Length: 108
Image (cartoon, rainbow, N blue to C red; front, side):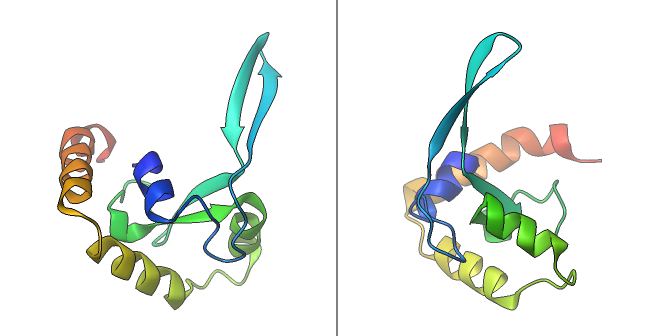
């Protein structure tokens, strides 16, 4: 779902609008690449990977959100629902397929 949510959100942080930066680090002797953008679970449930529950945040905004007062921002859910509803049929088919394929492996 990560690449699809990044595409839906134009590879930008929802809060501050920061663009994605790909960084590399050496880990266990190998170069690994990672993104400055995180995919946040709006309902704080890592098993709920529906597009309507996912939102792109930069590392700083993600940390700030989790260190805040613990309340969920209503703007997060409103945006994710609106953006997900406007997805193309091809995009919806991909997200549904991924959810169906991987839900059994992530469900409790």
